[in-house]
Length: 196
Ligand SMILES: C[S@@+](CC[C@H](N)C(=O)[O-])C[C@H]1O[C@@H](n2cnc3c(N)ncnc32)[C@H](O)[C@@H]1O
Image (cartoon, rainbow, N blue to C red):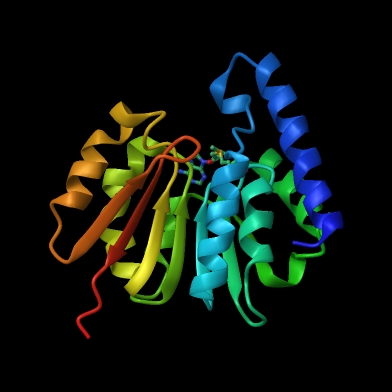
């Protein structure tokens, strides 16, 4: 990442953390992911070279900038959030990061975006939103992710109880491989075996 863009991510994270520490209501916090997790996602995305990626949970665009920065030329990231205020902040922050061309910031419910996504069309999916809905998302996630593609799910250690049913569902699904990486809040990495 170029120094100017990196400085922007550092500023956003510092501002987000400062805001969140004073905010008692969870839904009003930015809840940006840990820097170490952002770096791992960046590395995975750089290696995977996704033509198509989806992020569920944009917030102010902190993780979106990390994901979009790793895209190859021609790669596209759709990032969805259902909070209008956060969406508008993300629009401004992605413009400041000069990443507007590679990213579609969508103000919508995540389930609708997943439902509207063609089967097997997504190379990389990042889930960082309403954990209680992940069980409901699972059939759509399985459908849209191409075999060999990667699903990353944050907060699987920090909020292990909330994702327990989802994790069990993932692990009980045929042809799915999953590993919980103890980085940041705990990142579950999932892939669907490629039938070859
Ligand atoms: C943990 S924050 C995302 C943080 C962001 N990934 C980052 O690291 O900067 C979760 C976001 O998910 C959004 N969200 C929650 N439920 C949603 C839903 N059903 N559809 C779309 N977005 C949702 C919230 O508005 C919130 O901004």
